[in-house]
Length: 173
Image 1 (spheres, rainbow, N blue to C red):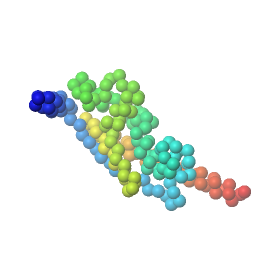
Image 2: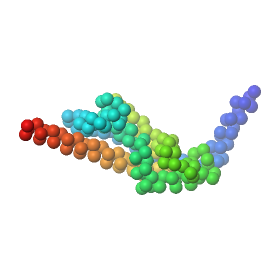
Image 3: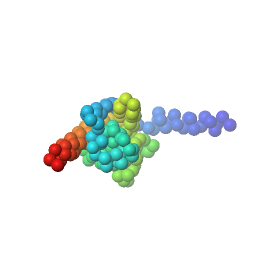
């Protein structure tokens, strides 16, 4: 009976220490500051539906964006995620991306190597990226941060333009 409990533990330890390739993590954290008068999503009502909530903030939208296929494809195009995460497939099939992975598979795998922690009350978002190389983990984390900043800036710019057009129309009508 003890064998039933101990055998899986022994197999797991043997795999993790004998077969699995080392992984390294890089953590980045940030908050999204709201401009006075509300968030960009307040003026872009259609984006509230994208985030899945009625009164979503820019951070809610960003949380969804970081998990999106769009961001995964952008980062893959720039950093070749597939090559990095497939490099140990022959040895470590548990923690590697399989060679025939589709885009949908890569997005699923992304959720295994990119962990997002989001404290709605504080507006703090923490992202941990795991990779087989510490420098690569940092590069991916920086790329996520840069793309997140671009996305939030685009939302803010669109919101300002919409507010300007709305106010201009109100003045001239």
